[in-house]
Image (cartoon, rainbow, N blue to C red; front, side, top):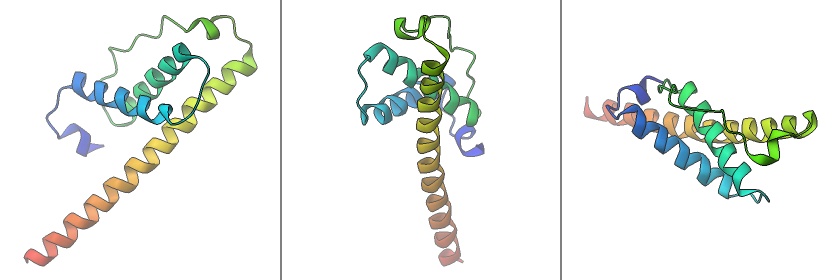
Length: 113
């Protein structure tokens, strides 16, 4: 988490990157409703920001996709599961990449001594 905070990039930029990453992840699966896909990406992006300490106050969830406005509880639960699963997939991949980067940096530091 400190790694994200220390980059010096503005929170707006970090939110845009998180949204682009979430949309790219969701583009790998087929869904019938583009509006719902955009909302899923937005939700995943929000959760990424919250997880990694990026200011998420700019997010606005007041406009739901048409398909979710009158959805039953099972449909909403399914959407939330998709969002959670996407987040877990992405954060797992990010954590592995960060760990590999840390290990490489430590190995490099040992060689320099």
